[in-house]
Length: 334
Image 1 (tube, helix red, strand yellow):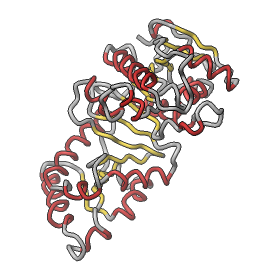
Image 2 (image 1 turned 90 degrees about the vertical axis):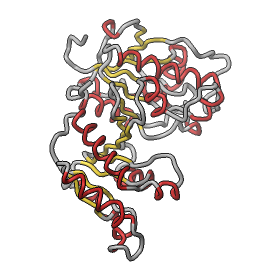
Image 3 (image 1 turned 90 degrees about the horizontal axis):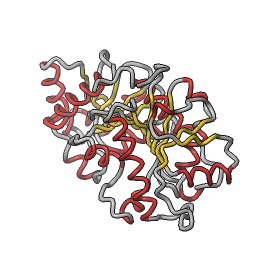
């Protein structure tokens, strides 16, 4: 599949009306091409218009299969889906056409990866409102990947500067997130997260479970979730042979992971881990979707409609998503 031995990374260009086309094109100018062969699934008319408008000096090379690609810095190899009407496309505006188009790019990239024509997928941002307007009945990327790869409840992992963070819950209210911190759920997630790390080639190190309450509840003085659920889960997991510790107070666990004390952290709710990673380095925080038959990484920012097609969007997160995909793909176990 890959004559140069570099992994082929499929890159769906995201919502055409957002910053996706710009950051994907700019990423093709980065030396990331030394680490990966980048293949875009998108709309040729949109990419050409953005490249011309913003004077991005890339050569758009339309191909039919990955084997036809010219994988040099400055070349944007594209499988052209031709699914955007340039007469009705308006940058920065929610559009059902763009929602459908973005879904098409993702589906094509998944098809390439599932067919082993690509080694991983690195996604650009999509817009939930545009998906809905286009009658695409998914909340976001994770749900699309889960359904199209027949994966139940894919795991989300963030990576930034070597720190890895998993999430016990994602898009639920804080009240609901606290309610689902149970012994059984923690055990299930640690087992699955450990398997996901092994799938990425991470086979050593200790996983930390973050505390839920301030100072991990101070032995039940202000909150008993640690005593009732987290500590018993850690004890049982240890008996099962898992290298896990916790609860570790949330105000220190991420720092300890950053300096190498832990190979990963299980964050107990969405913002607990998001704030820690994005504060450390917003642009370099990359989402990795685990537990699927294919590897997927993603930028962790939105479509930024307010700056779409203005030439000021940074490609750094897109470049990092490609790098992380390239880093893990040689170890990824299908």
